Length: 228
Ligand SMILES: CCCCCCCCCCCCCC(=O)SCCNC(=O)CCNC(=O)[C@H](O)C(C)(C)COP(=O)(O)OP(=O)(O)OC[C@H]1O[C@@H](n2cnc3c(N)ncnc32)[C@H](O)[C@@H]1OP(=O)(O)O
Image (cartoon, rainbow, N blue to C red; front, side, top):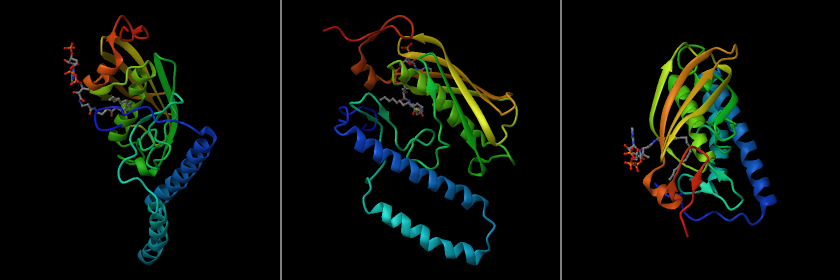
């Protein structure tokens, strides 16, 4: 995807090779995620920290031997999947992503995930901006899942109580569809089942996407492609 638009579908010619590539990339991201966590939590002394840097730089150099010049973009692919490699919440190739694995059924989306030291804001608790990012993503999946790729126009959050680090879940649901605008709500819940943050969002299909999608009719799910 270029900024603001979709390119043609990315062809998937060899699904097995692609799966192998993606699994290897995700395994690397898992390992780097462990490194991220260890980097935040380590109490090694300054000499030991400096001693670790060359090995990390060596791996970075080896990965850059064959790398994209910029971000990996969003790839609607011919196998029907929308690949979001670098997304900081769900991107399988992004070690910063928790990562969220979101299930959805068109009107609801849900995820369970674990966050550790790299996501801390208040002591022992999730950073508020990360909570917002999680809810933005979980709400934002629903429009895409019904064929209306939409961007966040507004996101209102109510931080009800601190969110402890550890196992969390987030859910979102569609409240109303009005043409290209979708109103959604969602919640972040701690391991005890307490709602810690609630969200209301307005998602809008941007003009550039509308041109490809035709005329919206009726409620979510009823969607008329352009005639002819
Ligand atoms: C290319 C597709 C990308 C898809 C990505 C999917 C990834 C999924 C991942 C998701 C997770 C991550 C998610 C992210 O991180 S998304 C990243 C964060 N969001 C953005 O960067 C969005 C920036 N803003 C825009 O691109 C546009 O302004 C949007 C897309 C919002 C509207 O677009 P556009 O400018 O073309 O629309 P329009 O002017 O024709 O207005 C249309 C209608 O909408 C109404 N309106 C507009 N704005 C607002 C507002 N703020 N409050 C209330 N209403 C608003 C407007 O009044 C009108 O209503 P009506 O007069 O018809 O009644």
